[in-house]
Image (cartoon, rainbow, N blue to C red; front, side, top):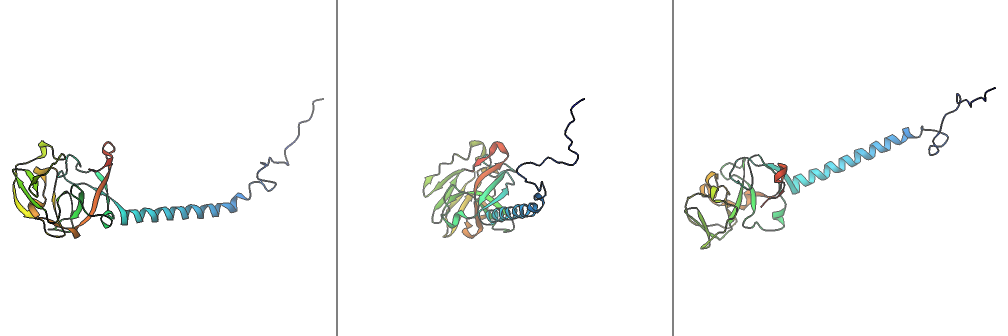
Length: 199
């Protein structure tokens, strides 16, 4: 006579960590888990909003005036807070409101600071009588344009695009007031092959 197998009709397997009550306690725990998830999401969004509003802002470059360093449609981050901590410096790449239409934003390089004597002879830039070393302007992007000497007024900056033949800059609209400058280009993130610090 074969041995009888134990019947499990009225029994159930209970994982040892759940105790006799089985999986029932999992239900009340779902609400605190959801609350924690929502809380973490709200905190993350608040931190992201703070960073974007007060510190960093993603922007898209439109146009070719900063080539070869920055291409048309390239995505970069600008630091909107840095100039509360340090002064604007020569060679900084800045984003500013276009003086002739503040609803538009431009991106250019700082060439002359307040008090500087700036002139351009046949495309060669001179600041305070010395020719400016500009490795960011390859010969392919240089031009032969001249500009008479100007003294940059207080709280103004002389700005030029790196692609001199394609740039609408201080040669056209003059030095830019400091109050129009609202960010420094610091990091490129798209396309991936150009990811890195903006120089």
